[in-house]
Length: 262
Image (cartoon, rainbow, N blue to C red; front, side, top):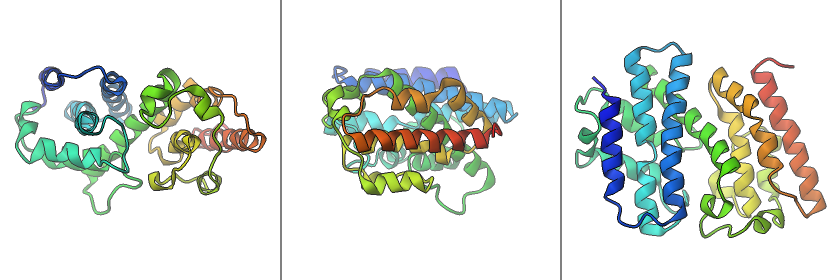
């Protein structure tokens, strides 16, 4: 049995162990965690899953970024190339039994472990069983959707600590050819291909190409996330501005096709 309220208390207790909460990324990741958990719950409900699977999706949302807090403590930044936060979070939970603080029953351990490990990969690993694959897809969508909210609402220096210090850093940046061509091919951007600040921003826009459920695309459309994120900055370079408008059309058309608006 999954007790979500007890899991939330356990998560709060986990956060209370961190003495230095002054880092901008710390509060951002707390808010992100709760939003992802709610997104996962909503997706599971829209899929008409059982109450137990809805609770499981919500629990995975609570736990999916637990490794990020250790990353902030160690590195003072959020950098998935330098630090595998998903893999580290999995080790934190399962190597020394920390998972039992969040759920007493061990029957879901493999689903939780695999979903966390796969939530930020470019692609989900092969040969997962049907239920594990489903929850891996749910957490990936829930996480990506909230990444759009984060990029809409948060300060850029909190989103990209040590990488972007002010709005002008993004506005004066240019887009790498490799990243741009990935968008033209309607693919997600490999994190290792990101070079410029704008590459990191466009990487988020490309998440739309890897969503799994109709409800996820509907949330994207309702919030106009692609337009909002692109319009957040005034791009100084003429070619970059043209590329961003082309990306706007490509991604929005893709979303419309997914929800059958074209």
